[in-house]
Image (cartoon, rainbow over all chains, first blue to last red; front, top):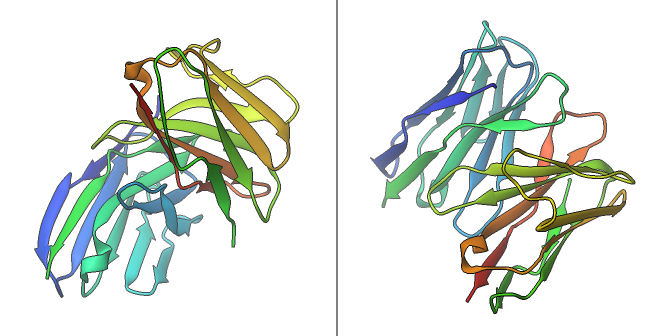
Amino acid sequence: GQQLNQSPQSMFIQEGEDVSMNCTSSSIFNTWLWYKQEPGEGPVLLIALYKAGELTSNGRLTAQFGITRKDSFLNISASIPSDVGIYFCAGPNNAGNMLTFGGGTRLMVKP
Amino acid sequence: GAVVSQHPSWVICKSGTSVKIECRSLDFQATTMFWYRQFPKQSLMLMATSNEGSKATYEQGVEKDKFLINHASLTLSTLTVTSAHPEDSSFYICSADRAGTDTQYFGPGTRLTVL
């Protein structure tokens, strides 16, 4: 089946630093989704990417859909303590009715 | 927005009892809802896909007689954990597929603890 490899698995950074994480796959995805999950909560959609090469921003977050449709990255600029959480990339299967999730990147921000 | 609610937020029960978890899409209709299970420090694992008015499709290794899913309407799906045991303790999360998009919106999750 389709698999998403997310890296890094965890990051511990200083407040104010920029963060970059990525997601790769051996197969093509037509949509890339980035979610954030805080402890004890469900994932919240941050950015949805629908077109290869697309670069989309949401506040301090920027995500890009790779040209090959096999990768995506998420950047967070000027991190703040409330950015702490687990960030998941996800992509739907060909039928569009099931999501495959990456393993997640756990972000910790030191004030 | 696209809001999905879950009830209850957390539940503690004795071994052998059954627990029902509700998932509702509050401001949109969802022909498909999904149930996930998440263990600490792990990613979400899809348990089953439910479509309104039809039987749920379970992932390999998920017991359909233990995890009963009912998708009664376009805004409500329920997951019943029957005869729960301590190993069923987990974080259960539902999501709803907004019609016309490939995007799933997640509920806040239900933490189940079986004593």
